[in-house]
Image (cartoon, rainbow, N blue to C red):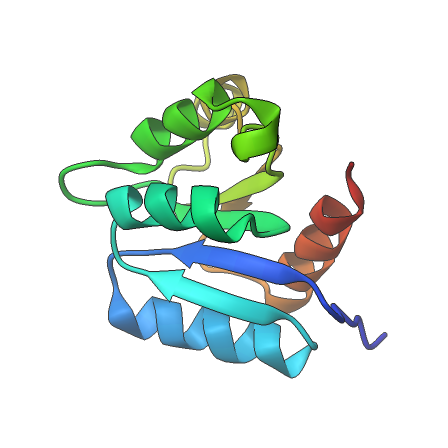
Length: 130
């Protein structure tokens, strides 16, 4: 099934330039518009200014990580992006890790290595949320 993400703006956050490029290409192939950055701080600034439809963040990053980012995002007022739908990418896949990730404010936990069709499907679901 070819999943399409027309007019969906995704903010991708990952400290690896390779991963950012792969995710950008994958999402753009499905019609999404992607803004990709390497730090949580930069992502927070852009999220408030660009108001993407979906936030897709790596969890393990140096300095400020995905938990820091989602905490800051959820602390924002709704009209500043505080309700932005979000999923995290992580190698931490235990039930305890998953529960902590969801409690932190992410709607989805995407385990690495990433299944491309699952990733696109999750972004599509998140983009539908109000």
